[in-house]
Length: 195
Image (cartoon, rainbow, N blue to C red; front, side, top):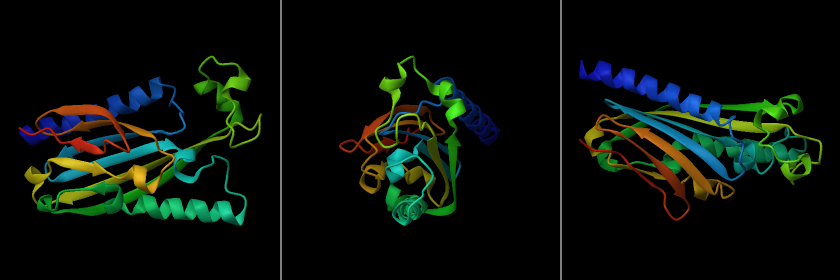
């Protein structure tokens, strides 16, 4: 029964997190990313999402060979979950699955995240004025942990791999409780609530 309640809580948490991001108008803020994490039994699920700018330095479709190489390099870094999320060795966690996705917001959808600023205030320096394609990336990770009770923290090293990421807002749901906060390059630890 306890596992059923936790799973239902995890599902509710994920829906609430998705609703919060949707309510934010899928806030598109360069330098800011989000992590949603759930520890359910021996399974740790982590979702990392943010503007493409945070991962590759631009948001338009990769056009030049250099941009295509940057995109491939970013995808490789995102797939290297053990360098992005350092888990305690005692927890015996192994990566079971990684999935990557990128969604482009077309110029016609620009209004969806317009925060009331004049167009010139909202322009982004990495693409010409009037080109408002926004590329949001998402990476989902599933870890299986042999000793989940030893998973007391997650050291988030996204800032090292992607220096254009300045802060990460996180939500973490564990069997004991849920927590949340903001990480930056000087504060990279998500503490897993313990019973």
